[in-house]
Length: 297
Image 1 (cartoon, rainbow, N blue to C red):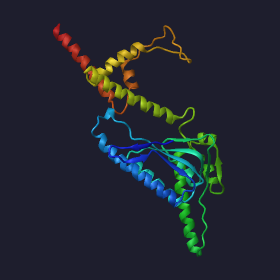
Image 2: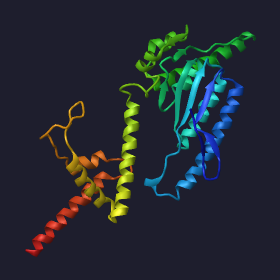
Image 3: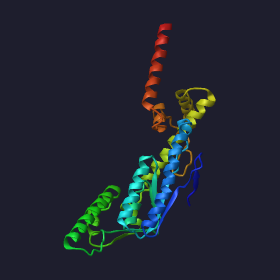
């Protein structure tokens, strides 16, 4: 279930876009209207965030395409893919969630999500393009050449976004290739929402890093110390609490293990913290203290 979001200037948008039914011009019209509002809201969000310190900024909502579609027009699909590319260039994350079927053009749309999830009852189908042409011989040849190029472009996307075997892609030129949820996991149609999903681990790590960034900045402000000193104090606090546990979460007595500050900084590492520079600064400070002690002697 999506949420209605609103920026300071009252631009409302949904963070879930439903792609249900045939992919046609009517669906495209609604898709473009909704994504127009999202891009307008993102532009206002960027302006608003310039007034807020980085560590206290809230992220722009991720956009999810909820898909249950038998497919449809390749031309409409191309326009939707172009819009998704444009949104990503603006820094908008676009995910996909297959609620039912993702067939034909909807299959391509579904595998284009950054984070891709699906219902255990979801079904998937890939095949080559179909067309019905009444034209002169040369016109028919031209149409076939065009759809050959379209198929090659889509096949390149499938190879890039999934782990679908080459032979499956080739067979799809001759017949409909169907897949269930287990196949979707095996072949990489989805990358989140199941046990062992790398994308879930990545998302958790990103949230953890952001939480530490905020914690360090907040602690430093309250304690009236700079960021580096705040990290040192937090290291000492966490180090005193660090213990070993078994698989069931029980504390193992006598198994306390110290963590070095280098390891601690690596655990806190994120794009917002220049860890190597912080370590170098700390080493320089230690050397200066030693020099001062030598001079005093």
